[in-house]
Length: 514
Image (cartoon, rainbow, N blue to C red; front, side, top):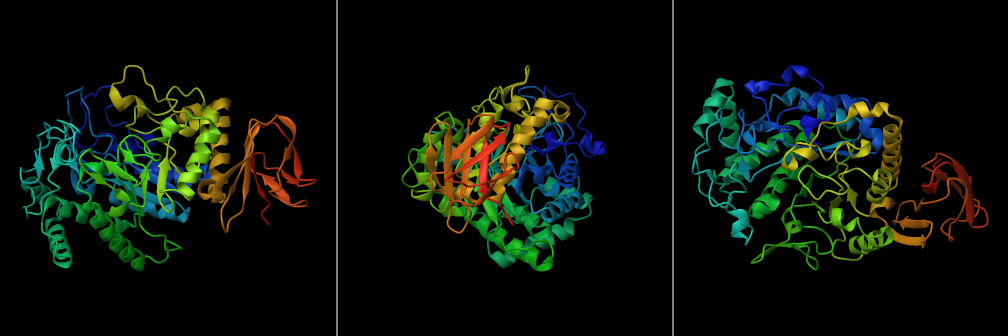
């Protein structure tokens, strides 16, 4: 979710830091905040969707001013850092972040925060530039080679951290002045001294940022990171970030043993634009590497547990059996075996997001949520939040505020119920995402997923609405009681088939739980 666009739980923080200039359409802060996320966790919204992890955009303090190169634009999205050690007041407070994570854990939901090492926010009328020994503004990346992805600025509005450097640098004067004014200068300096003494890393820009990012894990128990612009940084720093994050999470859990009931390891998923399974665009199918043209890098070798599968928005246009069988083979017997990926239909910056017009909501939800691999629900997919906004520029149209008011409409309620059924089924039965796919019948489409040590499930779409008989092709023995998790009805296998009378064309079958 874009934190600012999800739910406004506290209106008093809506215009922090004198952010009062009128922005271009959807290019200013809209009020969403951490308190709004807490409220929805407590309401059971995520639990009802089957969500077991929340990825939120960066909550660190952003530049206070705006960029006006394409109309007044504030850093509502969270990707223009000013101070990696503070929560942006528009999003809330550190106390609220701590409460949000604690509340999420109470509901068995993990929290991933978006992190940035590649760049700072731009200089604005209210924010000074970072020093030249920290950042570059030229050349602008042209994507033609490794160097033209990594040691260059992504845009004129972003200053690129010199992540290749191992040379010690002093902290920026503006940051020292800021910490002094906030009464925490001595504490921040003492913690940095301890970090660099313990690790032996030089005081180069990237290591400062690693320290600052892992503090959110150490202090509040963040479960994982979604890494922004991963391919635009020399990959070795991601190994360092993962190692330091694991140390930080171990320290947090030692101090807070009551918060989590298991030892799920720290999780890191990366955004590598144009990487995807099955050799999508710049991905090298045989090795999972990203191909810069003159160099290949396999980000799974640098601490990443998973990568965002940017190919899904193209692959979803295939027929459903081709999609599912290819993905299953690739994940279970191919190069992706033992690796993680996130499929999605929409995101905050992919203008090729699938079905932005929201014309195929039910079938798209099914195709995504029943697909092999991990899945990402972009906030509002589940209630058809608009992804095309007239008059908006660039990616702003994909970042509209959450359309909560639409839940008063019966069709939106039905769509949300559809997502909830698919999501809770996927969450309850690991075979859906991690199992081996086998088609049982082409029309109507019927398939099973099998996973060692887990319940086998049978799933169908395009069935007759009303009375229906379903041949199970020997998956379950006669006498087994099955639950259809779409309708909530139970049925018993007889003569290799089941009978159901439901108003739905979908069936989600698994043995009845005692």
